[in-house]
Image 1 (tube, one colour):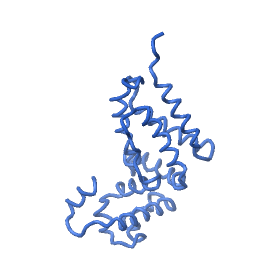
Image 2: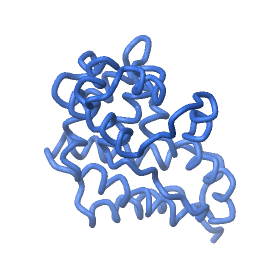
Image 3: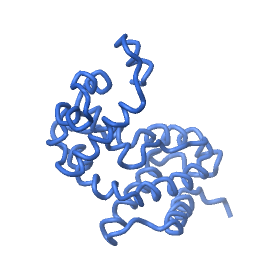
Image 4: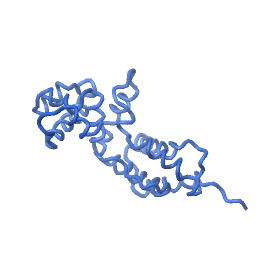
Length: 198
């Protein structure tokens, strides 16, 4: 739900960006230090110096708040998409590489994974990776025109990008370098390209 929709449902004082930022920052700090279990609406409100109702009006569930905190911890911005499939794969590689360079990403990653895999989930994967679905839609719409295989799972390119970034961090103890991300994008594009008839 976007800010306008939330405001329409909860008339009263207008939202303040500084309050939102303080709440999200408090949630990130609590998650980084104490995990999802420590990140209650009450604890976040206390740390942010606001009333619990103030938190609740913005994020009515802990899952929604944790999703916002996770997004903030890994950069706070969503992956920009152009509709040009090859350009989006290259842009996605660079975006994910920069997200993993942030110190907060390795710190938050265990909690993000645990929260997504909890039963029931404490964090929605879509909240952490909000552009995955749109990335797939654009691949489905533009792959054939770009000379890429339109028959593969349209989520594949995004999943390879994110999965490789995680695997690289776990295997090497560091995020991919910019050149490594660029090479990854080229490997993905080459692997998806439909061979031209001889």
